[in-house]
Amino acid sequence: MVQTNKPSLLIVDDDPLISDTLTYVLSKDFDISAAESRDEGFALIADLLSISPSIKILVLSGQSDEANARHARALGAIDFVAKPCEPERLKSLLFNALLVQDAERSADKAPAPVKDSGIVGDSPAMDKLREQIKQYAAAPFPVLIEGESGSGKERVASSLHQLSPRSHKPYLALNCAAISPTLVEPTLFGYAKGAFTGATSARAGYFEEAENGTLFLDEIGELPLELQAKLLRVLENGEYQRVGETQPRFSNARVVTATNRDLRAEIKAGRFRADLYHRLSVFSIAVPPLREMGQDKLTLLNHFRDFYAREAKSQPFSLDPRAQQMWEDYHFPGNVRELRNIAIRLTTKYPGMAVNAQQLEAELDTDQAYPQEIPLASDSKALIELARKQLQTLANFNLDVTLRQWEKAYVEAALNMTHGNLSQAAKLLGINRTTLYSRMQTYGTE
Image (cartoon, rainbow, N blue to C red; front, side, top):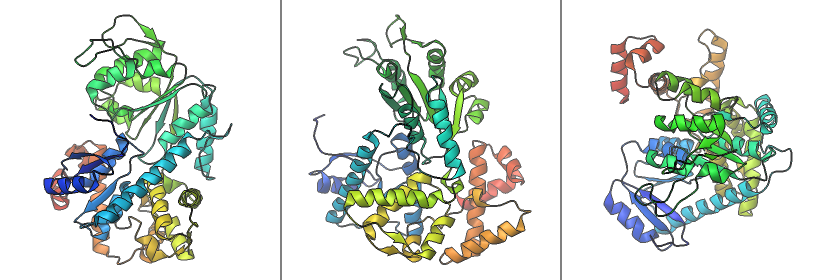
């Protein structure tokens, strides 16, 4: 492949004509790859971000109703554009996304002040998180970071390294979901010349290159089962072998891992080794979801708003009182990643302006319902308060639609928790299996 200085752009569409047209229009400015789409476009957003959290996703869709736009943004897309879109506008949006990405990379490369975790927020949850990072940073033992997608697990891993005595040593990060399972072993441990087809020279792996620094393994739940024993061996005595070699090598790298899966459930399902889990979780850190961080929603908004306004050389926006209340009440299903993307869009659309509730509502995924917001059924006052807030903040509220959304969310949550086992999911929901199957057909749930 010819190397170019153009930024890389992946076009995903099931219509070859659209892919070819976009390639023709954008190939002058971008190094383009194209792939066919799949049925679940929204799921693709989450999968791409799990592989590369810094990737910028722009959704160009003919299904341009407001609910789809909000949901795509909540999942992590930087923006949603209705088809057809003028080529110059599309280029402008793509170049803006590149500017945002460059600004974030520059900020990430900037050294953090000594004794500063780089974690923003003043809530008790954030105070606890910072305290855990400082407490565990100096130790040589593994740390397991658990949390929802978009909650900031990568930032926690980076902070553990920056505050450790290893901060002047290498910090390497590998997303276990980002590469083919057949390449995980040579990537981690290296390989000898001729070890496999294409191995024209020997190469060091991440454990060797990390030396006495830190190796961050993201999405550790995706590590193939057959490699988990080899990782356990390194954690126990530092010993590993390059693929194609018999001579043992040793690594003193500190291993930090992260996952958005419930590894205990993965152990029960036979997909993750219990002994590896216990070894990885000598220390464990739970990154709280944004919905549990109270006033930190505003603190983070101000942080990102000021940062992107400086980068854009524009005046920061503000929220009027009703918009601010809407912001505080919003559930942020996409966590800090979603908040950051909203701040980017508001900075672009309303520089130096006071954003009102109607303008803000267009950026929020208020059409979706999330089970974690429901209080206990016995707490009628909390239920009434939740209903009052939703009636105040949601435009065009419809009770039937809302109830269907709640029900669909619970069905999907139960199926996710039980890995698709209908009997177990029905038991969790307190209904019989036949009723659950009927509800799944109604909502088109796979």
